Image (cartoon, rainbow, N blue to C red):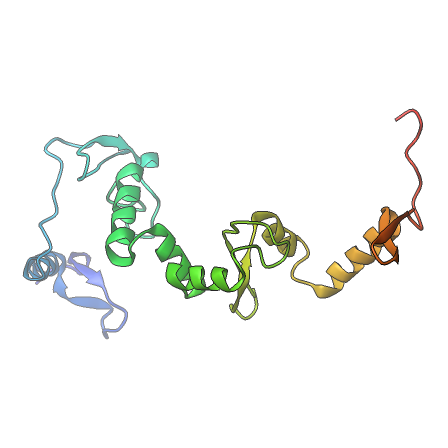
Length: 205
């Protein structure tokens, strides 16, 4: 017989405790990992002081702040930030062919191949301003649907106007009333028209 403290909690069981004690549960878990080909967890060869943690990859002892936060019991990942990032990049490269492919798939549901096909359909330019080499995939924030490929400035502009056609239309009206406009008065002949509202800058400015 063991005290309740010797068992992990399990809300699904009537007594609220796991079937196996902590020692046996750890042994079974380790055996399962070995069966799956997962290497045994390495541990530091020297005692670790308070507020410090050992990284199995670089085998360095660093402050806890040098390890990414997590929701696990320890509150920190097993690997320090540089090693954690390196492992993440390696996983993205191995599983997805690179970080860009991973990002596109995870956030937009398409890959680099589909990105390039959509860009070719747009003639290789921004879908809004026509600028060359756009790199931002525009999508509807409510639906998640991909809408086109735009440049950095146009992508930021859509975000600032909150994808609202009404706000964009008001902005156009505002600019037409407050800036000089080029008006076509004859085929091939344009005339600059002054703003309909606003005031000129002060002579002292």
